[in-house]
Length: 167
Image 1: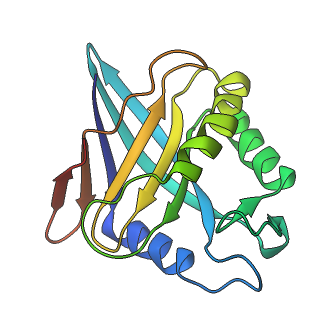
Image 2: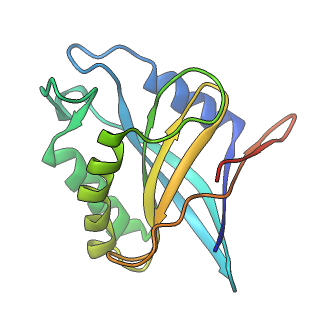
């Protein structure tokens, strides 16, 4: 399956800005991207609509990870997926330049909570994105137990349009 992810430069800049803000105790910030989908044959286009940052009180103290979301944050994002019928992608940043990748912790935690989005909003595809300062990397859950393909191409829509292949 060929998966393409498109986001405006303005929104991507706002997301990166938010994710770089300091938190009182978490070492990184996280949020949720809402998107619409268009599909045909073996193609899936993810069109980013909006971004929702976690509130400071939705982080849990956990020294094993850079940031841990509380149940309220996940519940709020799941409810939004059900209410708006949107695709929801968890997003965080590793900073630096070039195409980032998921850490072992990212893979473990994504596998725990992303399938719950599929359960409550099975009409859509959900997943996770990690940003660097210049690129992105992502994975989509087509179903709870089905394939979890990587996003093949990212496009930042602005002047100029920027594209990169991530998988």
